[in-house]
Length: 453
Ligand code: PMP
Image 1 (cartoon, rainbow, N blue to C red):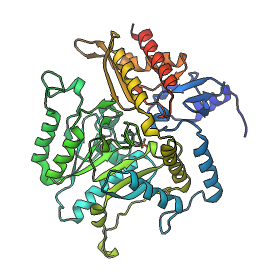
Image 2 (spheres, rainbow, N blue to C red):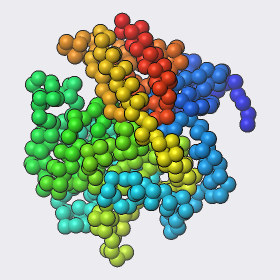
Image 3 (cartoon, protein in one colour):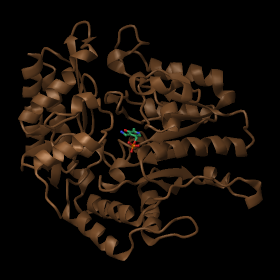
Image 4 (cartoon, rainbow, N blue to C red):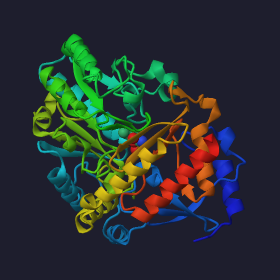
């Protein structure tokens, strides 16, 4: 392999690469980091600098970077079969993984439909729900409920059920119409006069009930990120919210599509976030952690009831006419299988509690800082919301780029972080050690102080 020097790579990157979610005028010409290796909780650049990966390879990493067992499984699979197709054939890895996913999924989910990224996993769920209603005598049920601050991906369908203006507004004329429900964002609640989620009795759920009652006749489904709205700002939902949504969906015959792309695979401390409240969605979208962050893979799980509605004579056109070229790729499935093995071997879920407790203590401690307005946590996810003024909860103007500045400061301390506006995100590999977590939190605390005073 040709090893190029940092300067050449930076030049190639600047000249030829267009980065996602990046204002390229700010990117080009800056001495950006180019990663060439990963080791456990660290990523390592061309010059050998090590960065603790505070965002777990954009929320995908589970067992650390370059974990030997997954590396080995991938290598073995490359030598057996790199790809074939699920169109007219099956493959052993895809079939075995489907069984194992159903074994660990919330009870009642029975079928696995593969794709290769989170956006398509959600979009598939939306199409399935729509077609299900069409094929079960509910032709008028064509609409979807989506939440403010929701993020479900960047394809046209997944954007349609998203709710983050800066990402979606420009495409508004392209998107299909939806019914918008308020975000369960306790710190910035628009419904509760006291802004206190503990005493409001879940007004956001009551508003959802009102919307469902009004629109039940035309509603095919509801799309939710259970437990935490990720890209919206690591907004943690109040206890009982997910269960309440499930009950409303049942009452109004609306299919519940749970987007567990970010929260699935142990991230919230349970294998799946829905499971924390004993909820089985009708459709569940998975990606990111499914392959432990190794390879593009996604799955949309659903129930036998929904699957059966697609059953029929070919001529009836009840088939689910959807499929991607790399659906069920055996190398990706082999990585996912090796990851599930490691969940068992490392007793990963059981090992998380001390880290979750530690994260909690450190986050609570940050509330003493003058510009930390809110801290949020669900399992191994943390969000720190920076504000100009705590009393009024006044946010920093986005032009101040306070989140970006904190993350750049953290870089000097050997951390890699990526903010969401004014929110500092904590999403390390689940395998991070307590010592590394302490380093991460020390670095974040020092960086917030350095930037905001
Ligand atoms: N849903 C959620 C909850 C996500 O967090 C993301 C990605 N951040 C997606 C969907 C989209 O996934 P992908 O980027 O793989 O398309």
